[in-house]
Image 1: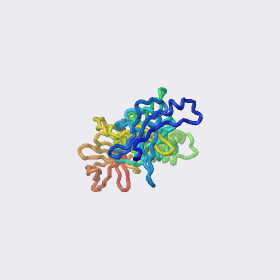
Image 2: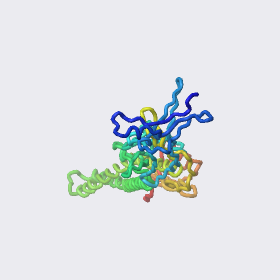
Image 3: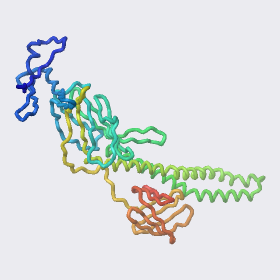
Image 4: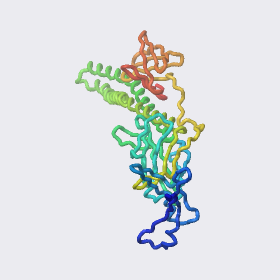
Length: 405
């Protein structure tokens, strides 16, 4: 009759100093075929041998003809998936694991980010990091956010997965992107700073636009006066020349301000659009995306799964990452490049203003995501982009934040 039971013993190394007879000839487990013809593995409970514990991290290879099958000697500890929260700069997830492989064999795998309908890329492509290594899950159509992940071990040898939500940001087009904490506090601060910068820019723009026509008119009159005075009469020309010398650089400064703000403002609004995109992606991730991680023991011939996050957890009642109020076109808008100001009132009326030109009144109405204007019989339609940008085929209107002329 064919043997149906096999004993498992440890084999000593050639330089072993332990008592071979007592330590290595005691079975620590056995394999057997049960009555249902299933191959079973069972640890011996009457043998205590510390070296045998690492067999829990071994793989049994079964080969028949050209087929090979691997069997792990342990089942992974299954834990809940981790619900992502963006209220803290670092998320520490404990990874309890008894009788684990040596440190150099441990790997953390970022299996997936679930319940989000946006692209996710991983660096490295394997999605795995070892102790003291760092990986990144890059999230979003335009790679707006990142989840940096790392396998760490504390002074008490306890393992944990550390997740750091971040977003890349360039302070200027020529600067290198820095990583900032993807927290509600940081992103709100970024948006508020951009809006203040835009507000300050429009403030200087409107001051220059308000004062420049009067300056140019005064300069024109001074130049006309000087033409009527004999160039040899320096005494009569002197006060007019002094005024002209004072006004000309001021007018040039205002012209430069208007040109600079007209050029820079689209860039500032583009930065604001990017920041709002990060905030909206944060709303998708925060409190609803589930992180699925795995702790793995690696070997030359395969891997053993130690911890797996698989069980679903209910979505909690979580406040939005950043709350957006319902937007309304009511307010002041400026048209680039003509610098015309559109002041929209709640009742559907608006005023069209150009520097040095009498204001014209017209009407506006919302048409879905667009805003239609009628001015002196002429109609024009602008599509809304975010809460601060209206675009037609030839021009763009930008919302003016908190500035009064």
